[in-house]
Image 1 (cartoon, rainbow, N blue to C red):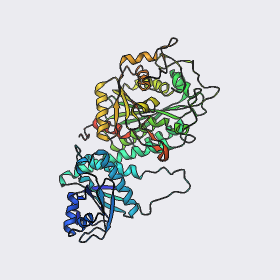
Image 2: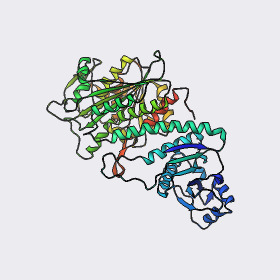
Image 3: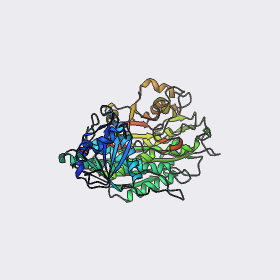
Image 4: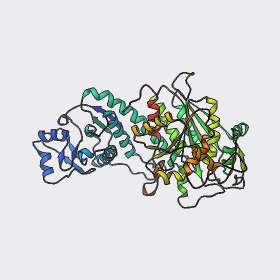
Length: 501
């Protein structure tokens, strides 16, 4: 879809449809009042008759409104004006896009971007509207033999801003939103792909294909032979029970000078997690294809970064692996020597993500990174703690944690910080090795982060547990694309082009 911004009066718009808001109870927004005056009270008469109350999400499509140049006017219920918050604004936009697609309007001018959302400026409103529109149009139908398409899909959407002075802000918002949306789409497509197609090799191929499209992106891979030579025994152990070989894929983005230390994004890429010998229950095991959600989000963030061409150096490490039960699979009771030299007693082979990540976190030391952020669908305990609304954030570096929390609030891709105190480290004590790969039932997400923290002493580090946010279950099952918006906002904020609240 094509997006743009303009500044103009609603009655002068010659379009297939113009979109304006109505508040509860039956109160026209400022823009709608302008249309009402030009149409000699046509809109207010409809409201008085009770055609629209103004409740959030209500829609009323009008044709041939008197004295209006546009073919249609879509009245959108926005709820009570003082209660219009970020969440409701995005829901209204999504419902509006869905409605426009059903009307047959191929273009529209939207004035909802002029609504007052507390604490948010034009940049935020336009960017969130574009991202919500793109997300609402997403479908994963690549593997369907019969594809349903909208009758006449919306192709062009123009957002109106109050003054011409705000046009550059709106244009920047669209640029950022389209980059984020492209990254989110890549993330969702890869994550939704079935595990018989999306293998560790497939992840590598997607990364390599992405690098081929951008001059400042390069691709490299660490294969199992090299992993063995490097002593990445924990990583290799997890993949030993699978016929699909493990591959660590690396995307190098060069946007700054060689003397600038890179940021590294590490994504857990378990393309399928059966649990290994500690096999999972069969119910909902199909959703374990999403255990590569961290890797998918790193791919998405690298895509957004390459689109934005930000002046920063970033390395995306995509830790591809598959955890299956087999005669060669690693076992509970095994003791593994990691690349760092530390030893790990395997208590449960379903606590495999941290074993893949710990060797990857050691491997990326060679790049002398300034910051490393790992992203992983790591623990079910995270869902018990935070549900499906917030990703868990844990970090040994307070400034980095605050940066990520700020980015999460700006992007609407929320995270919540959990503690990482030394007291939690005791849960990993082992009588036979330096540590166990699993603590007790208490604070499972924190114990997992404590495990990873033992491999991150040489750089600033943060961990995002996205087990509750990477995908949805049920009738609308599918990848969400999170936390691509948060990661991209973090990178935007790290550069001179960052748009702050």
